Amino acid sequence: MSIEAIPLQERIERYSFEERICHWLTGLSYLYCMATGLAFYSPYLFWIATALGGGPTSRFWHPFVGLAFVAAAMWMHHIWRRDMTLTDYDRKWFDKSKDYVENRDDLVPPQWRFNGGQKVFYWAMFYGAFLLLLSGLVMWFPEYVPFQLRWVRPIVIIVHEGAALITIGAFIIHIYMGVFMVPGSVTAMVTGFVSRDWAWTHHRLWYRQVMGRRTTRK
Ligand code: HEM
Image 1 (cartoon, rainbow, N blue to C red):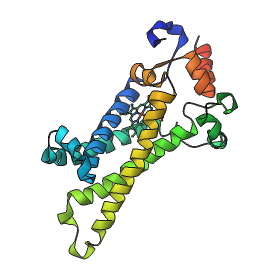
Image 2 (image 1 turned 180 degrees about the vertical axis):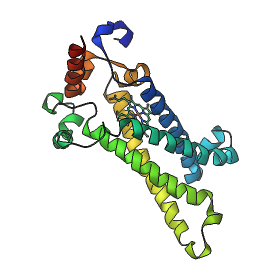
Image 3 (image 1 turned 120 degrees about the horizontal axis):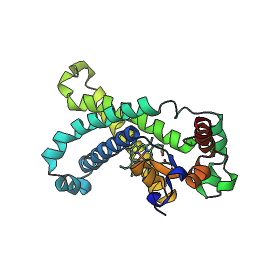
Image 4 (image 1 turned 120 degrees about the vertical axis):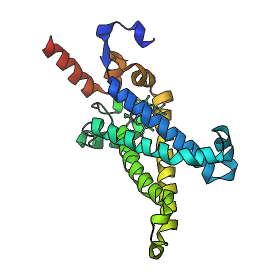
C-alpha cells in the first residue's frame, strides 16, 4: 500500500524535509565520487568516466564533489549525531543481529529511531569521510607536500583507496537494506512518512516515544 493511501493520522513522520535534503545530497555526491573513483582505480572500469563526460571532466569534478560529500556528511552529523550514539540497546541488538539478518523479527529486541546496524553504517561513513578528505587533499595538492615528506604519498594513496573500499562495502549493504530488505524505507526517505505498522515493526521504542508525544500534545 502506498503511503498516500494511509490516512494522515495513521502516518508517522520519520524524516523532516531538512533530513531528506541532507540525505540525498550526501547520497548523490557519494555516488558520483564512488563511480568516478572506481573509474580511476581500474582500467576495466574506465568506461564509467567515459559515460560521465570523459576522463579529464571526471578528474576535474571528483575532488570538488568530494568536498560537497564531506560538507553534506558534516551537516548530517550535525542533525543526527545524538540519534547515532551507541547505547546498551544497540549491544542487545548486536547480540541478536543474526536473527535480524535471517528475518526472525520477533527475536530481535525493540529499537529506538535507529538500530545498531544503522548506527555502525553511519559511523563508518562519518570516519570514512574524514579519511577520504585528508588523504584526498594531499593527492589534490601534492606540490604542498615538502620533499622530505615524499614518503607520505604512497601511504596516503593506500588510505584513500582503503577508506573508499570500506565505505563502498558499507554503502552496498545500506542500499540493499534500505531498498530491498526493509520495504517502506525508501518511501520514508522520499516522502518523510512511514505507517504506524512500519514504525512498530522496525523501531518499536521510537514508535512508542512518538505516539506518547502525540497523546500528550492532544
Ligand atoms: C544514493 C543512494 C542511497 C540510497 C538509495 C539510500 C537509501 C536510504 C533509505 C531508504 C533510508 C531509510 C532507512 C530507514 O529509515 O530505516 C536511508 C537512511 C539513511 N541513509 Fe541512506 N541512502 C543512500 C545513500 C546514503 C549515503 C551515501 C549515506 C552516508 C554517507 C547515507 C546515510 C544514511 C543514514 C545515516 C541513514 C539513517 C540510518 C540508516 O537507515 O542507515 N545514505 N537511506
